[in-house]
Length: 488
Image (cartoon, rainbow, N blue to C red):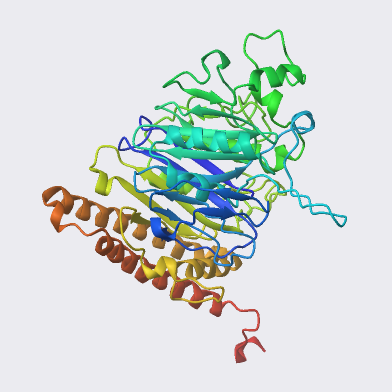
């Protein structure tokens, strides 16, 4: 799926938390938030795309997930946080090159062509990963280790990037070919920006797989790279892993690198020159750093802003009013086919019961708003979970989708309602989180996560309905078939 990911280390965030966030951009899939309890987790998993059966461990943890409502192509659980306050988002579709795929081909399902032959299962992929990994890990590092073992055993049919976080660490894993992988701990003081490309730019093979170290990979990865002539500059002291494992195409410069440029420009306006003559980086630069130390601490609202962005303030804004021919040149970050976006925030300074918050929004991020959910709960509010394939104003998904479609068609007059809606939702969300956090800290027995989530959901429903009313009224007034006697 064409997505965008942001990872925030605990030293880079506004409150010392770790955050992993991703827009799940697919084929207009209808999504919901749900809680999978241990009794609901199957012990034998069968994938739809790969036709692969996998035995799963006993005693899974409860976890949140954002699956497809229509399961005909699989679960596609997308993102979640488990009962041990470990977050995971899967996956960011990434690029690679022909040399990698020739040396370690993707593992695709092969249907039997002749009588007597058997189908050959494919590997694992985005459809499967959250369900196979998140219920069985207790740290972000364990997430990398479990997923790496699964990739080596079963292979994958696609190139993906996957993020994990806990209270202390954020990890990023990228697949390489069918069975290989590479992972790095995000530096505490850094923010990672990922726009559908192989992203990692530095890796220390000498320290890979050290106990407690910052680098992990499949054990033969360096040998694999050297054997198959993937290292294009063998004289260099460090392997250029982007050149070895990633892509360098014209399509990258339209679809991928401009997003990294916009995010870097926002996060580090002073460290580098991003515009004009002599710019350090432009929208088509291949060397934009994978991780950056931001100019200031990063908030949840910063993450939401970036993952909602459409190059505002630049000539590339598709909603720009000056008629610049470059308005539609690059793929925006906030996109019409987003199903769900979450910010998985683990607040290490707080007790376990209130440590994990999953900030949730559905559909085009440019027009939607975030609602926080305490994940240590026994149930999910109906407003987030009771979603069907039919449009309805009774759930967050469809209201968000309607808001996006209506505002996009009448962006100028409707944008102000979206701005007010997003600001009000953010303020109310923080107010309610603060109140419920303080209630827990004063008396843990008085805290009820389900009640807290329901109060927040009620607020989200109220504010979303208000915004929808405003936008619908404005759009109705501007319908093409409007006519009055004075128009004669």
